[in-house]
Image 1 (tube, helix red, strand yellow):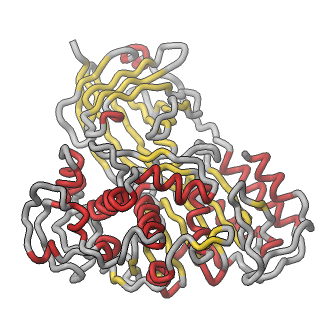
Image 2 (image 1 turned 30 degrees about the vertical axis):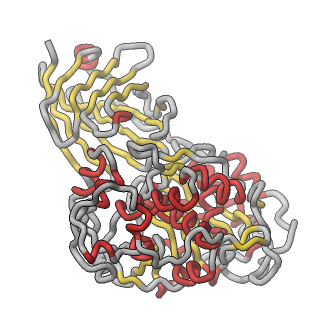
Image 3 (image 1 turned 120 degrees about the horizontal axis):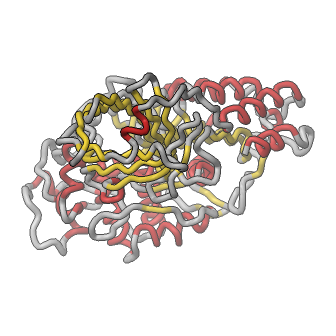
Length: 507
């Protein structure tokens, strides 16, 4: 991909004129057109600096389109262009888009339709009162349903998500929640409400949400059907669960940047789009008081941007005044406003700029640098490595969720086996290769992405393991300190989460 990035940026510097705002739009249904930044009125040198700062922001990818063409497409090792990436809560905006399509097609009569009408087949719903009966589809879209919910927004503990995950019927669990407020009274982030939207899409269309998406959205935009996680009833999860390639994420953004049109057809209704473009729901954010919300989209009106937002900076950002769509995937949080400013700073004109070979080379070099894995120093292998190799260490209950750990360090191909108590069955047994030469080794791919793992000895008793869930947007450092038959494990995620466990070799 480094070579491709350099080729894209250095060839045909004078080919093609920029499409300024108001020109006939291009439609990337088959594939995106590639352009130099200068052809689209942007400065390659400014974008090169933005690419370089992505390493400090734990980026997996950074993509920028202007006037319907890709001007920047960077992938940070060990992530690569052909890998799908979990988009987490950006899934919410995709589900809202499907609901908007159903509304445009006349399957939903109005956005303020009472929510409970779609669940009349349920034999009973707990905590049913007049406030719950007043919840509408629009309340769910705006996260103002009033349902009692604790998701960890603004520093909570995600208790509702945990309990929902343990329940046998997620939709019933959400419908049964008591009311904390009257509908429309207050914003509170609620992935449960988004999951009800997925259920409503299925009720309206008579089709599985993912199948409807393939027919009415993904197929039209030229997006290969992505992986979508399901609840116990096999309903595609409305609040998270989609994995998409960054270039396909950008197509969702481009649909909105072009006011809901695609290839001359209007897919989204005007009133839905107007609400997104003029988001007015106060998110009561202590991090950024200027944030607003509407129809499962975030906005910062002061900066004239709106976006889809997923945990750990899985973002599709629209900058309408700049005619830009930007996509970020990452394994840590990011500052949306600062990123918008830095992207906007690269815009110098609406029309083409003169070719700048030096700046183009600078950008190509930056892309090549971040896409190439750097070998790290590993130090000498201590005697304890052969002692612990193949031994299984058992851990009592701990906040890391680790049950057993076995490292095969003396094998020709070093590997690990980990058993956990994770709620997700796919995370209960982890095994794969580990690089001990300063480079990652990758596990087989799964719907949770792939694990890239490497280890280095800090001293004679301490092994530091770098674990990335490539494509999942999560990364940890495990520090293992061995003392006879015991091991102390300390884990720290890139976003600051920490945990510790004490283990001992099994009999």
